Image (cartoon, rainbow, N blue to C red; front, side, top):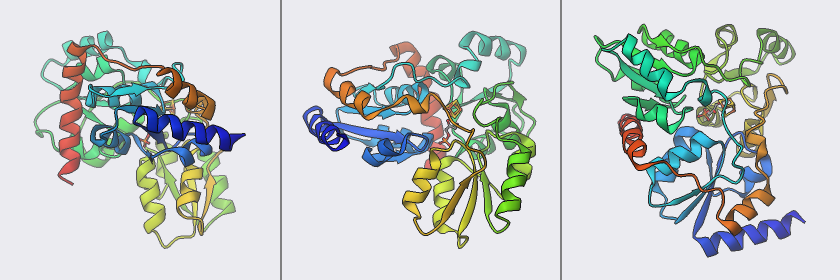
Length: 305
Ligand code: 13P
Ligand code: SF4
């Protein structure tokens, strides 16, 4: 059954001149089908670089929106229109405008997990892979507002020593990973390297060996001489890690860390997306141009590395 569906998707992909991008949290069969997998930063760059006419984005709304901002001439499809990110919805453009009024001299850095409208109100965008570099690149005498994830924000404060104005947003998937989970996993696998995402809470991060974006976790696992890893992020990454390093073992810190929005994607929905060219993700021109500035600045900083 799946083989037939996969053949159908491949045929539709050629017909539409499409590429399929899949985030590291996607269901395994979608990761396997995708032309490119990756973290938010890697996928944004792929979306901007591809010469395909159509991008099928297997991820969540803000990721597809980012692709639409960076590549306005391409058609970006999100196979399930309900795949949102509750963290991104934790701050509105109006709330950010009010915060900016309270700190009129501040520069605004927004995490890519945010709406296009919030990006348009920001000076710089960042992902979990480059938040530290983005903040480090800013003039040391400027105040910085960082939205919406407080935990990524605190990680940046810790790494840069800069005093950021934080917004109290959080990812409901990462905050379910507890200190207890990490301690139990370490007791069971004492030789394992503990990798956690910066969206985790501070006590969890303190117990880890490495604080990394999902793309960085893949690189770390490939380069490390260690054979076992405890992984504190959404469980979908385990598939990507095992596929890349079949000789190593990966243990989720907890099986409870599941992002329901990421799991809305199915092979059927990808086929329907390509058949009916749905659901198109577009960003109004005035917002797009302002949001693109924040994203372009981020990509420039990354490319210096
Ligand atoms: P990455 O950019 O590290 O893949 O993270 C995206 C995300 O949504 C984390 O919850
Ligand atoms: Fe958003 Fe959290 Fe899901 Fe990432 S894991 S997409 S931050 S809800």
